[in-house]
Length: 386
Image (cartoon, rainbow, N blue to C red; front, side, top):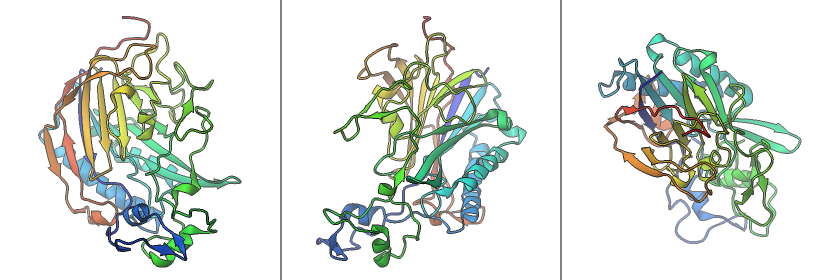
């Protein structure tokens, strides 16, 4: 069992590409006679990447491999210490392609590619949170998108693989629709593309995307973001039973982990479904995101546990906190944990060209590694016991 843990954040801006804020000037603009939402129209207008999904994925993997090699070689990383688990996290939306999501078949294949990327024995004492993969499919009700976070323990193959699926879709997750006011436009994206050639045909607009219902939320009518607990939410309901079931709590190498993807953290997904009696309390809470930070009222980690966030918004940033006072079991959701911020030990700039790939074709910046100091792993404790 590991005695220490070290967090390494791969901070890179994974948001859709932002155009010049003056693209339409400073006065009100109209498109085909209809008003447009200037902020969203100008600020998040195109997904970066290549039209060929397989080529896009291969290029992003090359960029990722360069970041991994930089982390491996850095002397601030406790690479030779077999008692220290190194956790390398990539932000949300790292893998999405230039249309906003890949086809499901490509996404499934990518999970295996990432597993093989860290199969060498040198990665044995590492764990990887590979950002998220956006996977799309369609049924009779429209376009569905899974936001999938693959977690992989190095050198363990499929037994060391986990998948977590995001529940809550945020308004900043996808390119926003053109504001239509009272006009019911048949195809706003087509109108958009008529004047904005950087938006590939087939791109996902946020108003056309649904996350599949996973049986864990009930909308309260008349509220913007009010979700009530239902019969599938509660103690123990987030504990993974299978490696790929998408739930947010799992164990690897005798450590207990909880994962929340961006808005899921703000919505207190794990606080609403904490470990049940005699289950292990969460020792390490992981938050891959794009537009989120650590929220004390959403922290579920135990006393002396750690919370790690790697975010792909606003240029990319990260944070690590240690829990000095945990939220008691059965406490009100408004209760907050007491946290102590951990300072970054080393920042490592990453190159503009990685393994022959120009990074700016896929991301808004070249990225940076944030390497944190090694921290003590908290002792395992169990719900219902001191």
